[in-house]
Amino acid sequence: MSEGAAKKEERHKFQAIRGTRDLLPPETALWNHVEQTANEVFATFGFGAIRVPIFEPTELFARSIGLDTDVVSKEMYTFEDYEATELVELRTAAVTNVASLATGEALRDFLDRVGNFILAAEKAFEAGGIPKTPENERTLQMARELIADLQTFRYQGEREILPRVAELKDAVRQVRFGDVISLRPEATASVCRAYIEHGMRQLPQPVKLYYIGPMFRRERPQKGRYRQFYQIGAEVLGGSDAPAIDAEVIEMVMTFFDRLELHGVQLDINSIGCRECRPKYVELLRAELLKVKDKLGPDSQRRIRTNPLRVLDSKLESEQGTIATLPRITDHLCEACATHYSAVKRQLEMRGVFFRENWRLVRGLDYYMRTTFEITAQGLGSQNAVCGGGRYDGLVELLGGPPTKGIGFAIGEDRLVLSLQESGKAPAQPGRDVYIAWMGERAHATAIRAAKDLRKAGFSVELPPVEQKFGKALGQADKLGAKHALILGDNEVSEGLWTLKTLADGAQLKLPEPALIEHLRKSKAVSS
Ligand code: AMP
Image 1 (cartoon, helix red, strand yellow):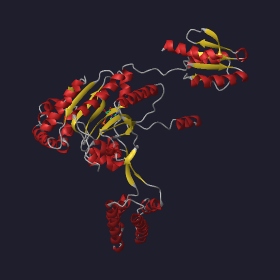
Image 2 (spheres, protein in one colour):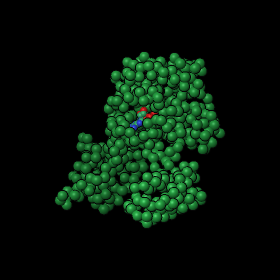
Image 3 (tube, rainbow, N blue to C red):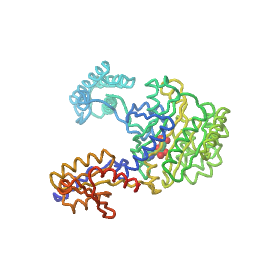
Image 4 (cartoon, rainbow, N blue to C red):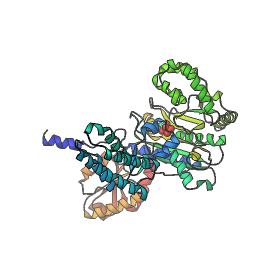
């Protein structure tokens, strides 16, 4: 490879990681508009912004979202959080690049190194330098026993000791140096944790919070599905589970989408019952599914055992006819859930929110109960869900808090923006209001002052850092989409009369300095 080609390759080495992307202007202007609208609309419903950390203990997500969900079992970015200490070096020395254990001496040497590590780890365990978990205690104990066992072994050859050595190496690798943490795959669990941690129960209930930020899931990337994606979400915590709360939360999302002029919005709702009625329905569903098992594909067959509700999520064409014959949860709700569901529907009607009932809407996460909803929008292909939400009354308690009612939703911001772009709603990035074409030292000083004043008055100004010939300056102003060029040369500065050129029609005007801002204000008002 030539030197030039090697350099070129070097330059192309860094690219955004698969499933992540850079958002650039002018697209970011639309993102800002979406977020600004969320801030405005949610504030009118009395919601306050919350910012929670990007990473949390893995356990928080495992406990709330559920171990047998795809999100927790396959999709989280999880790592051990620890400082590189002497322990790390001792472990590396003990188990990496272990040469053959072909002699008794080599084995003794290996056991010495592992022994050193275990001794240091035991001390750290006692002192709290590594997590004092039952798992760590068990692992250290096991390693000790294996070492003792191998030490008393009469060495007769490598083959006999290898299984035990492998076990010992595994144990050594399993010692946890730090807490296991994950990048957040969603934010509801974090908001509930924060509600408990900050004693928000003492505030007037319910507490209404919203967030905007990135989430991380290791999913297969495709259009509308990323590994780092953004959600705009809201949660209502505490107080009662009055159906009006469910309806108002849904009304808020719909108002937000309406303000953004999102096209083809379709709201689906369902009730998935509570701890009383849902398990009974799930058993009934399982029994019915077993009867039609042979008509289902391998994924659904597996789910009959693990999570029968998920079968209802299936998009497989061949399964649709069978699924249509299954019992529906809405026919099996307990009285309290059925009353709640009817009241939510009535409340939505009172608010003029159109909805479609969808008995198959069960949502993937474990913590939902009663009301669930999903909103789809136009132009998104198979990934057309822009918002999912529901009631999760048991979640705060599950995380160690007091019994607390809760309901919320999360909007996929990437998909929302995509849908807006598909329907042509993207506002073009605003060009500059004024490009200041200056020439000469005196004009430069005046130009700096003019830029400051214009920016203070709210205009977007481009002030070239170095002197340009007027022709070049005007060309540059044009490329940047500037509306006006302010021409400042020695003549203008000494006369106190500035030249303002409107780039669209080439019209030129001489103005005294104090009249400039007023003139620009008027022309902006006319053009907007
Ligand atoms: P969930 O937290 O799974 O209920 O998702 C709520 C919303 O977030 C979905 O309706 C999507 O709009 C969006 N979403 C979820 N996962 C992704 C992803 N991997 N990429 C982009 N958007 C996503």
